[in-house]
Image (cartoon, rainbow, N blue to C red; front, top):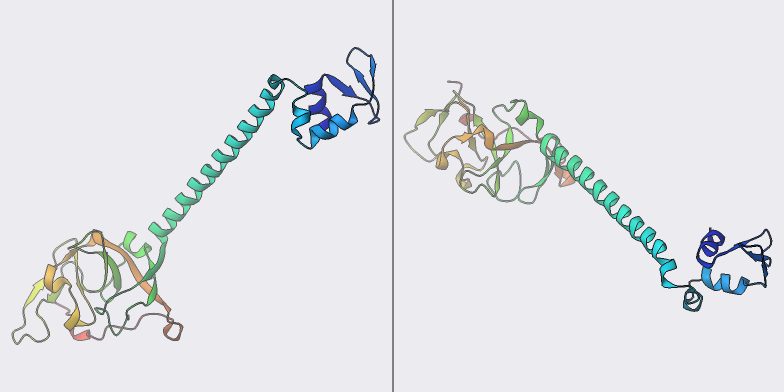
Length: 227
């Protein structure tokens, strides 16, 4: 490779032996092997032996190689980014929960896995714990339990209320409540939540390890009404 590059730049070609060099017209020349060694090592003194115009093709090849590697890297980045986006959007992901509203089922800083297939296939059921975009702040997500689906009768009053009030969940909505009823901001405050705000269904607790597994049932079973 170096012999070919050197011959192109210098106007000479080499024979089988390193010490035998001849010009293209066939005239024998004395050995210039040391000059070739300096050329291979990238020495500045060797480069100065040739006009700058001889190096232009070499610089163009370097530039093309650099641009090719850059575009290939960007292409791989876009491809893997699209794969990751589809995985998080349609399959699920890891979620770190915060706040006391789902205690004792989910504690503060618990790590859970949320799957998104149930949302896309409309398989959300009463009793499921879901991740939802907050109706009060679309930039944040909340974690609540589904108490009622569209058409279900739900209790809209607080546990401490003497008189209980009930309502029906409108079409295309769900009724959400936290397991910690005394310390939860949920549908009792902002009403039924559109189904489209559901981001995923929590199906597994990952951390802490001593509580690893599927989530327990709601401690507020009395809140589920048949009609």
